[in-house]
Length: 133
Image (cartoon, rainbow, N blue to C red; front, side):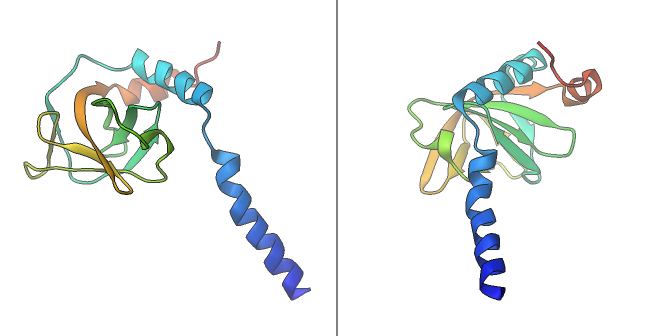
């Protein structure tokens, strides 16, 4: 019985990533929603830590520096592997500021220079609720 429970638990852990895997179609839909709330490009933003992130395409990721401060980041092409990264980081060479000129999105052994940063009105996005089409 103990071995059966261990096997079920292992199967659940192995299957979990597949259940939450994002397809390109899902990423595209999420990107379109974030773009509705994205402002004009900016050069930099304050960054104390990476609160969370969401991949939204091969060269795009949304990062939250706090619970309500989100940014749509586009990286320079080519950026092989970002789309499939299991975790990311963001460099901050200017101490607590992320800059499109100097910083990178990092993942595994890869890193891609930030090409564009657009702030997202995340509070308004949450207030508006889920995007229904």
